[in-house]
Picture 1: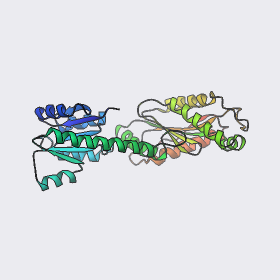
Picture 2 (picture 1 turned 180 degrees about the horizontal axis):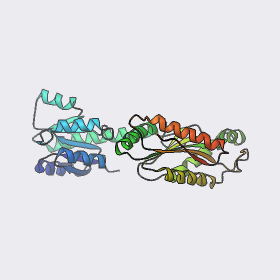
Picture 3 (picture 1 turned 90 degrees about the vertical axis):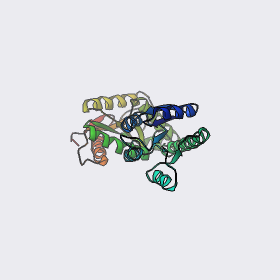
Picture 4 (picture 1 turned 120 degrees about the horizontal axis):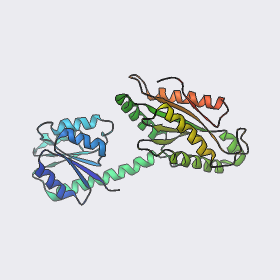
Length: 301
Protein backbone atom coordinates (compact mmCIF):
# COMPACT_ATOMS: atom_id res chain seq x y z
CA UNK A 1 0.00 0.00 0.00
CA UNK A 2 1.28 3.46 -0.92
CA UNK A 3 2.45 5.58 1.99
CA UNK A 4 1.06 9.06 2.61
CA UNK A 5 3.05 12.08 3.75
CA UNK A 6 1.41 15.24 5.07
CA UNK A 7 3.35 18.51 4.81
CA UNK A 8 2.20 21.29 7.16
CA UNK A 9 3.91 24.57 6.29
CA UNK A 10 2.67 28.14 5.80
CA UNK A 11 5.20 28.74 3.02
CA UNK A 12 3.91 27.47 -0.37
CA UNK A 13 7.42 27.49 -1.82
CA UNK A 14 8.62 25.07 0.88
CA UNK A 15 5.62 22.83 0.24
CA UNK A 16 6.36 22.73 -3.48
CA UNK A 17 10.05 22.00 -2.89
CA UNK A 18 9.39 19.18 -0.40
CA UNK A 19 6.70 17.70 -2.65
CA UNK A 20 9.08 17.66 -5.61
CA UNK A 21 11.74 15.93 -3.49
CA UNK A 22 9.41 13.27 -2.12
CA UNK A 23 6.69 12.61 -4.68
CA UNK A 24 8.37 9.38 -5.82
CA UNK A 25 8.29 7.99 -2.27
CA UNK A 26 4.68 8.58 -1.24
CA UNK A 27 1.35 10.24 -1.90
CA UNK A 28 1.65 13.88 -0.88
CA UNK A 29 -0.86 15.94 1.11
CA UNK A 30 -0.35 19.48 2.36
CA UNK A 31 -1.82 22.15 4.61
CA UNK A 32 -0.79 25.78 4.97
CA UNK A 33 -1.68 26.14 8.67
CA UNK A 34 -1.79 24.03 11.79
CA UNK A 35 -5.57 23.71 12.18
CA UNK A 36 -6.03 22.58 8.58
CA UNK A 37 -3.15 20.15 9.02
CA UNK A 38 -4.76 18.58 12.08
CA UNK A 39 -8.06 18.13 10.23
CA UNK A 40 -6.33 16.47 7.27
CA UNK A 41 -4.28 14.26 9.59
CA UNK A 42 -7.44 13.02 11.37
CA UNK A 43 -9.17 12.33 8.07
CA UNK A 44 -6.25 10.76 6.18
CA UNK A 45 -4.03 9.21 8.90
CA UNK A 46 -0.72 9.78 7.07
CA UNK A 47 2.29 7.56 7.69
CA UNK A 48 4.52 10.63 8.23
CA UNK A 49 4.04 14.35 8.94
CA UNK A 50 6.60 16.96 7.92
CA UNK A 51 5.89 19.93 10.17
CA UNK A 52 7.32 23.43 9.93
CA UNK A 53 8.36 24.85 13.30
CA UNK A 54 8.18 28.55 12.47
CA UNK A 55 4.55 28.98 11.40
CA UNK A 56 2.78 32.20 12.37
CA UNK A 57 -0.80 31.42 13.44
CA UNK A 58 0.05 28.21 15.31
CA UNK A 59 3.67 27.16 15.49
CA UNK A 60 4.91 23.63 14.91
CA UNK A 61 5.41 22.90 18.60
CA UNK A 62 1.73 23.62 19.33
CA UNK A 63 0.60 21.48 16.38
CA UNK A 64 2.88 18.65 17.52
CA UNK A 65 1.53 18.89 21.08
CA UNK A 66 -2.02 18.52 19.75
CA UNK A 67 -0.98 15.53 17.63
CA UNK A 68 0.60 13.84 20.65
CA UNK A 69 -2.51 14.52 22.76
CA UNK A 70 -4.92 13.07 20.17
CA UNK A 71 -5.46 9.30 20.63
CA UNK A 72 -6.17 8.95 16.90
CA UNK A 73 -2.93 10.70 15.87
CA UNK A 74 -0.37 10.18 18.59
CA UNK A 75 1.23 7.21 16.81
CA UNK A 76 1.84 9.23 13.64
CA UNK A 77 5.54 10.21 13.46
CA UNK A 78 6.44 13.87 13.05
CA UNK A 79 9.60 15.23 11.43
CA UNK A 80 10.17 18.91 12.19
CA UNK A 81 11.37 21.18 9.41
CA UNK A 82 13.19 24.15 10.93
CA UNK A 83 15.47 27.06 10.04
CA UNK A 84 16.98 26.95 13.53
CA UNK A 85 20.26 25.13 14.00
CA UNK A 86 22.16 24.09 17.06
CA UNK A 87 21.93 21.66 19.95
CA UNK A 88 19.19 23.54 21.80
CA UNK A 89 16.95 23.55 18.72
CA UNK A 90 17.52 19.85 18.10
CA UNK A 91 16.72 18.97 21.71
CA UNK A 92 13.57 21.13 21.64
CA UNK A 93 12.32 19.30 18.54
CA UNK A 94 12.93 15.86 19.98
CA UNK A 95 11.52 16.79 23.41
CA UNK A 96 8.34 17.97 21.68
CA UNK A 97 7.77 14.42 20.43
CA UNK A 98 9.26 14.52 16.93
CA UNK A 99 11.09 11.45 15.68
CA UNK A 100 13.56 13.54 13.64
CA UNK A 101 14.19 17.00 12.22
CA UNK A 102 15.34 18.50 8.92
CA UNK A 103 17.10 21.86 8.77
CA UNK A 104 16.75 24.59 6.16
CA UNK A 105 18.02 25.25 3.58
CA UNK A 106 16.72 21.88 2.41
CA UNK A 107 19.13 19.35 0.98
CA UNK A 108 17.29 16.97 -1.34
CA UNK A 109 19.46 13.94 -0.63
CA UNK A 110 19.18 14.42 3.15
CA UNK A 111 15.41 14.96 3.02
CA UNK A 112 14.88 11.86 0.89
CA UNK A 113 17.15 9.69 3.05
CA UNK A 114 15.53 10.70 6.34
CA UNK A 115 12.01 10.32 5.03
CA UNK A 116 12.82 6.97 3.41
CA UNK A 117 14.24 5.68 6.71
CA UNK A 118 11.14 6.66 8.68
CA UNK A 119 8.72 5.28 6.09
CA UNK A 120 10.55 1.94 6.24
CA UNK A 121 10.42 2.02 10.02
CA UNK A 122 6.69 2.77 9.93
CA UNK A 123 6.08 -0.12 7.54
CA UNK A 124 8.01 -2.49 9.81
CA UNK A 125 6.13 -1.28 12.90
CA UNK A 126 2.80 -1.62 11.08
CA UNK A 127 3.63 -5.24 10.21
CA UNK A 128 4.54 -6.02 13.81
CA UNK A 129 1.42 -4.25 15.04
CA UNK A 130 -0.74 -6.30 12.68
CA UNK A 131 0.77 -9.53 14.00
CA UNK A 132 0.39 -8.41 17.61
CA UNK A 133 -3.26 -7.51 17.08
CA UNK A 134 -4.37 -10.58 15.13
CA UNK A 135 -5.87 -13.80 16.48
CA UNK A 136 -3.74 -16.66 15.20
CA UNK A 137 -6.61 -19.12 14.71
CA UNK A 138 -9.31 -17.03 13.04
CA UNK A 139 -7.38 -14.14 11.52
CA UNK A 140 -9.71 -11.67 13.26
CA UNK A 141 -8.56 -8.91 15.56
CA UNK A 142 -7.65 -10.20 19.02
CA UNK A 143 -8.71 -9.04 22.47
CA UNK A 144 -5.84 -6.53 22.69
CA UNK A 145 -6.82 -4.88 19.41
CA UNK A 146 -10.46 -4.74 20.43
CA UNK A 147 -9.71 -3.20 23.83
CA UNK A 148 -7.62 -0.45 22.24
CA UNK A 149 -10.19 0.39 19.56
CA UNK A 150 -13.08 0.13 22.02
CA UNK A 151 -11.55 2.74 24.34
CA UNK A 152 -11.06 5.12 21.40
CA UNK A 153 -14.66 4.64 20.19
CA UNK A 154 -16.16 5.11 23.66
CA UNK A 155 -14.33 8.43 23.99
CA UNK A 156 -15.35 9.52 20.48
CA UNK A 157 -19.01 8.61 20.92
CA UNK A 158 -19.06 10.38 24.29
CA UNK A 159 -17.74 13.56 22.63
CA UNK A 160 -20.17 13.31 19.72
CA UNK A 161 -23.11 12.10 21.87
CA UNK A 162 -23.85 9.27 19.45
CA UNK A 163 -24.88 5.68 20.09
CA UNK A 164 -22.20 2.99 20.16
CA UNK A 165 -23.22 -0.62 19.58
CA UNK A 166 -21.55 -3.74 21.00
CA UNK A 167 -22.44 -7.38 20.33
CA UNK A 168 -21.09 -10.33 22.32
CA UNK A 169 -21.37 -13.59 20.36
CA UNK A 170 -21.07 -17.09 21.79
CA UNK A 171 -21.09 -20.35 19.81
CA UNK A 172 -23.82 -22.47 21.35
CA UNK A 173 -22.69 -25.63 23.17
CA UNK A 174 -19.19 -25.44 21.71
CA UNK A 175 -17.72 -27.73 24.37
CA UNK A 176 -20.14 -30.43 23.23
CA UNK A 177 -19.03 -29.76 19.65
CA UNK A 178 -15.38 -30.24 20.58
CA UNK A 179 -16.14 -33.38 22.58
CA UNK A 180 -18.12 -34.87 19.71
CA UNK A 181 -16.06 -33.84 16.67
CA UNK A 182 -12.60 -33.23 18.12
CA UNK A 183 -10.51 -30.08 18.47
CA UNK A 184 -9.34 -29.97 14.86
CA UNK A 185 -12.89 -29.67 13.56
CA UNK A 186 -13.64 -27.38 16.49
CA UNK A 187 -10.96 -25.00 15.26
CA UNK A 188 -12.40 -25.14 11.74
CA UNK A 189 -15.85 -24.38 13.13
CA UNK A 190 -14.51 -21.25 14.85
CA UNK A 191 -12.82 -20.14 11.63
CA UNK A 192 -16.07 -20.54 9.66
CA UNK A 193 -18.09 -18.61 12.24
CA UNK A 194 -15.42 -15.88 12.30
CA UNK A 195 -15.58 -15.55 8.51
CA UNK A 196 -19.37 -15.26 8.61
CA UNK A 197 -19.22 -12.53 11.26
CA UNK A 198 -16.55 -10.64 9.32
CA UNK A 199 -18.64 -10.76 6.14
CA UNK A 200 -21.60 -9.32 8.06
CA UNK A 201 -19.57 -6.45 9.51
CA UNK A 202 -17.97 -4.30 6.86
CA UNK A 203 -18.93 -0.67 7.44
CA UNK A 204 -16.09 1.77 8.15
CA UNK A 205 -15.07 1.64 11.81
CA UNK A 206 -16.76 -1.69 12.52
CA UNK A 207 -14.57 -4.33 14.16
CA UNK A 208 -15.00 -8.06 14.77
CA UNK A 209 -12.64 -9.66 17.27
CA UNK A 210 -12.16 -13.01 18.92
CA UNK A 211 -12.80 -12.32 22.58
CA UNK A 212 -11.67 -15.66 23.94
CA UNK A 213 -12.46 -19.34 23.41
CA UNK A 214 -15.69 -19.59 21.42
CA UNK A 215 -16.70 -15.99 22.14
CA UNK A 216 -16.51 -13.09 19.70
CA UNK A 217 -17.20 -9.37 20.11
CA UNK A 218 -18.34 -6.85 17.52
CA UNK A 219 -17.96 -3.07 17.71
CA UNK A 220 -20.57 -1.11 15.73
CA UNK A 221 -20.10 2.69 15.74
CA UNK A 222 -23.10 4.99 15.35
CA UNK A 223 -25.64 2.18 15.63
CA UNK A 224 -29.06 2.56 17.25
CA UNK A 225 -30.89 -0.03 19.35
CA UNK A 226 -33.22 -0.90 16.46
CA UNK A 227 -30.26 -1.37 14.13
CA UNK A 228 -28.53 -3.55 16.72
CA UNK A 229 -31.59 -5.79 17.03
CA UNK A 230 -31.69 -6.27 13.26
CA UNK A 231 -27.94 -6.94 13.22
CA UNK A 232 -28.29 -9.57 15.96
CA UNK A 233 -31.03 -11.41 14.09
CA UNK A 234 -29.04 -11.21 10.88
CA UNK A 235 -25.82 -12.71 12.20
CA UNK A 236 -27.76 -15.52 13.93
CA UNK A 237 -29.36 -16.41 10.58
CA UNK A 238 -26.05 -16.11 8.69
CA UNK A 239 -24.23 -18.50 11.04
CA UNK A 240 -27.14 -20.97 10.97
CA UNK A 241 -27.07 -20.83 7.16
CA UNK A 242 -23.53 -22.21 7.20
CA UNK A 243 -25.20 -25.55 7.98
CA UNK A 244 -22.26 -26.79 10.05
CA UNK A 245 -23.47 -30.08 11.57
CA UNK A 246 -23.74 -30.17 15.38
CA UNK A 247 -25.16 -33.55 16.30
CA UNK A 248 -24.40 -33.02 20.00
CA UNK A 249 -26.36 -29.75 20.30
CA UNK A 250 -29.69 -29.80 22.14
CA UNK A 251 -30.61 -26.56 20.35
CA UNK A 252 -30.39 -27.39 16.64
CA UNK A 253 -28.85 -29.89 14.24
CA UNK A 254 -26.36 -27.27 13.04
CA UNK A 255 -24.02 -24.78 14.72
CA UNK A 256 -25.84 -21.74 16.13
CA UNK A 257 -24.90 -18.66 18.10
CA UNK A 258 -26.32 -16.60 20.94
CA UNK A 259 -25.83 -12.83 20.88
CA UNK A 260 -25.99 -10.14 23.56
CA UNK A 261 -26.55 -6.62 22.24
CA UNK A 262 -26.25 -3.12 23.62
CA UNK A 263 -26.53 0.34 22.08
CA UNK A 264 -25.91 3.40 24.21
CA UNK A 265 -24.49 6.90 24.23
CA UNK A 266 -21.58 6.66 26.69
CA UNK A 267 -22.17 8.90 29.68
CA UNK A 268 -19.59 11.29 31.17
CA UNK A 269 -18.31 8.69 33.61
CA UNK A 270 -19.04 5.56 31.55
CA UNK A 271 -16.13 3.14 31.18
CA UNK A 272 -15.83 0.67 28.30
CA UNK A 273 -16.33 -2.17 30.77
CA UNK A 274 -19.86 -0.96 31.53
CA UNK A 275 -20.99 -1.43 27.95
CA UNK A 276 -19.45 -4.88 27.85
CA UNK A 277 -21.18 -5.80 31.10
CA UNK A 278 -24.54 -4.83 29.63
CA UNK A 279 -23.84 -6.88 26.50
CA UNK A 280 -22.79 -9.82 28.68
CA UNK A 281 -26.06 -9.64 30.63
CA UNK A 282 -27.99 -9.63 27.37
CA UNK A 283 -25.98 -12.65 26.18
CA UNK A 284 -26.91 -14.49 29.38
CA UNK A 285 -30.57 -13.62 28.69
CA UNK A 286 -30.32 -15.01 25.14
CA UNK A 287 -28.90 -18.25 26.51
CA UNK A 288 -31.49 -18.45 29.29
CA UNK A 289 -34.27 -18.11 26.72
CA UNK A 290 -33.10 -21.09 24.68
CA UNK A 291 -30.01 -19.93 22.71
CA UNK A 292 -29.87 -19.56 18.91
CA UNK A 293 -31.13 -15.99 19.29
CA UNK A 294 -30.14 -12.46 20.20
CA UNK A 295 -31.20 -10.35 23.16
CA UNK A 296 -31.00 -6.60 23.68
CA UNK A 297 -29.79 -5.03 26.91
CA UNK A 298 -32.69 -3.21 28.54
CA UNK A 299 -30.66 -0.82 30.66
CA UNK A 300 -29.20 2.45 29.36
CA UNK A 301 -25.48 3.12 29.81
